[in-house]
Length: 261
Image 1 (spheres, rainbow, N blue to C red):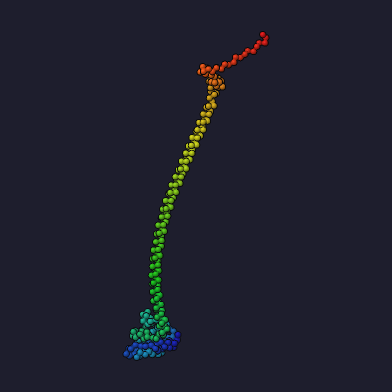
Image 2: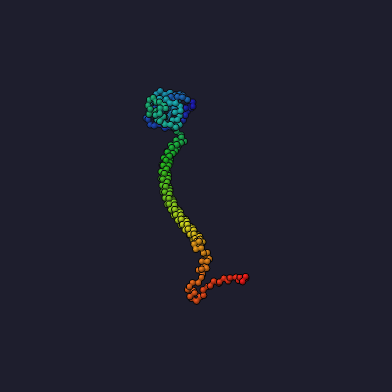
């Protein structure tokens, strides 16, 4: 921006600006540095401002400022007191008068509305951020509580299920043991019965063998065949004879005739 453009912009900015009742005359000289370098002055008399591209030695204060900082102040992007506090320009003379004149520049309604809207937006955004943080914090706490509650319930359910499973397992093991015991007892009983049956068979076989051996022993002892003994046992007894039963008489063998006689 050229020196002429800076002067023109300041003249427009202060054309409709209203001063304060100072009961006299006040003026400041601006020594612009950097782009558009040069000197100019701003005076106020009876509430009216006047900007001219000259040096003004009979001033209340001399302000040395770069063009960018000056334009930011004129455009309402920055406040003189803030910029001065940050040492973005220097003042020789009455600091209050210098900053007051710089602060009374005319800012367009649009810029004022924009600035106000920006400030309101910042406030709303800040408030929204705080509310969001609160909601997020509350949600986090609720989530933690819910998670803790769910975890506790799940743990209790797991314990119950584990306990129930253990009891069922014990019952199943006990039942299996009882079944195995009964099966073993049945098997032992069957085995005993089998042994007894086998012993009985063996005993019967021994009796049969002994009975079969009896006739042979009798024949060896008496020398009479068992058939003869049986026949003798069939002969009539004395009692039978006395009872009128004729005793059996063996027939007498007949000698054969002698043919030579």
